[in-house]
View (cartoon, one colour):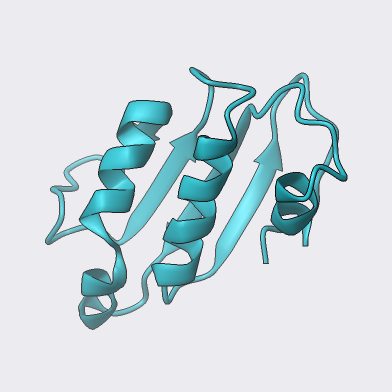
Length: 105
């Protein structure tokens, strides 16, 4: 709901400093993670991968911290796209200068 509110301009986007994780429970879920979206997020944010994780075949959990473009709606839309493609749960944590926006679902 928070993403829709952000995209609709209902919530101020002063700082998009958040992290979210995607957990894939089976390897068969991994093709659902769009590499184009990952590339977009890499350009807009900072990707943190678990130690020893290789893209894209071993991607079981992805952690993203969007810090480089705090006011960019493109970052929000990239997160939204990645969430739509993921079969795993998505969670969000607020950054130090953000109000809690709730879950991305």
